[in-house]
Amino acid sequence: MDAFGRQAQRAMLIQIGAAATLRDAIVKQTQTYTSVDRATRQLKRFERRGERIWRRGEQTVRRRRREVEHTTNGWRADAESAVKRVA
Image (cartoon, rainbow, N blue to C red):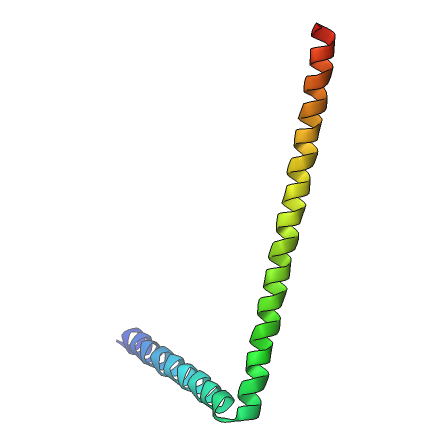
């Protein structure tokens, strides 16, 4: 019975710990958005993060475009050389 009691206690303590963690997160967010300065700072962080993600996406698109162009140019050169050999 002792092992069963310990397991039940652990289950209860896990739920209490999770609830306390959630409460702390809510309190922190509430503090962030109740002050104009803190809210402004947080919005600027979001903006910078969004800008970084956008820039990274553009870089990825440019890189992939260059890779495709390089590959297709290689195919074109192979095709031209094959045409010359046949003709």
